Image (cartoon, rainbow, N blue to C red; front, side):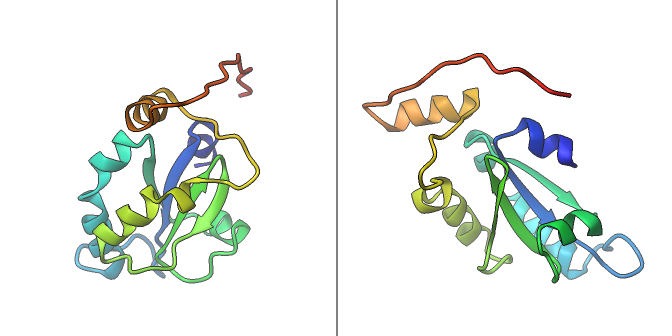
Length: 136
């Protein structure tokens, strides 16, 4: 799971844990995942990858104590969603809001898809292109 967040600048991770194993069809976590699947295409267009995990160690590392919980990693920095997980429109609005996307005091790193979106939405953009070393 760390690998996904390492290579993508914006990752949406939902922590799903049910005592005894994976959530079954019809359980709360399954219903929420079904709802969020409705916004997956919009997230892809914004350059946000959507994944799920049942990794309790990773949840603990980020202070997650209740499940399911939605966490948006902006440049690997976690931001926990406090709204209604059953309302995919509310989740999408939160994820695409400037206040959610912006990390104060930091210049944004973007992937190609995100850059294309920024260029389409804004008439003036300054982009600094640099070569990054990939550490595996």
